[in-house]
Length: 81
Image (cartoon, rainbow, N blue to C red; front, top):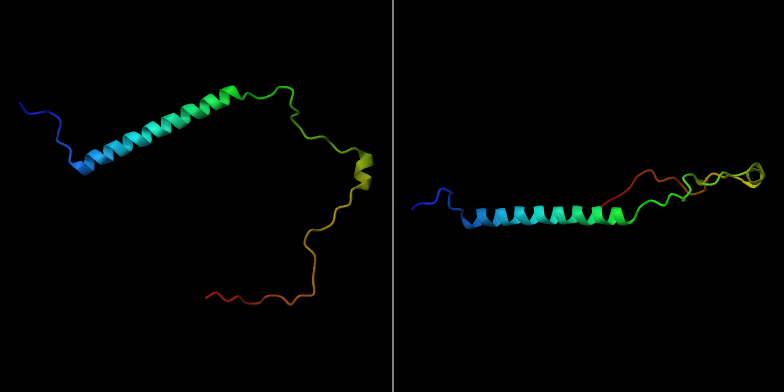
């Protein structure tokens, strides 16, 4: 008696095995990450905002630009080999 499912060639069989393996790997990674998240819950006593600087600390704070002018000649062209 003949089978109702078509015969798969070797490349088609390998493709289905690869698809199945990728699906199983995806499901395993999803399950592992879900287990990790449930075991590492957020700490309710953790601060939600960083501490705010007081006015006394602001007076001592000096802000300077991070990019400063120099006496080097500007680059007008580049050469790439």
